[in-house]
Length: 250
Image (cartoon, rainbow, N blue to C red; front, side, top):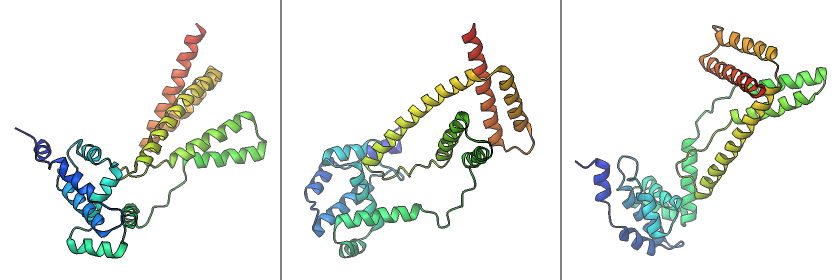
């Protein structure tokens, strides 16, 4: 028995319908805007639930030599202005496809933005960095404290790391996402090297004192569950560095 998704895909209109609509589109006149609206409305009818059948968007984009963002804007256009009357009003109000896409993008951003954004509390990186600056003012700077400031600054930036909604991202923005992934991979590699080097410099007594300090914090009844999990990971990292040091000395 065919699934609902398979049935929708097999019943999909021929690609020539979209090719013909693409040929009728002009960037400047009202008929071109109408053709985009018809294109978006017809393709939206192929959705199963809220999504097109797998691979259908890419298939249509190849057939008309257009990017995914342009096609998604057409579908969004038909969704925001669902009737002939609404379409006519949109053409009269905006006059060009460029202005319509700008309005659609603004509508999406306004919908995504919360009415009253919550005020963020102090982060671990921010609190720790301020404490370090106080120590530096009181006792002076050292190479190790300078390293601490750099690391806590990086942590503070990542604590505010929020990616945009992936719905409707342009091809250029998708390229940016790919580069971010590469940068984070490089960061993780350097972090691993820094952990190994730092663990090698730590003597056994200092490591055991730090493990005890972290374990006491983990076992405290007022410590939140998330912080307890972080403490467990830190202890495991310290114990792993001890095992590596022992192996390297043999």
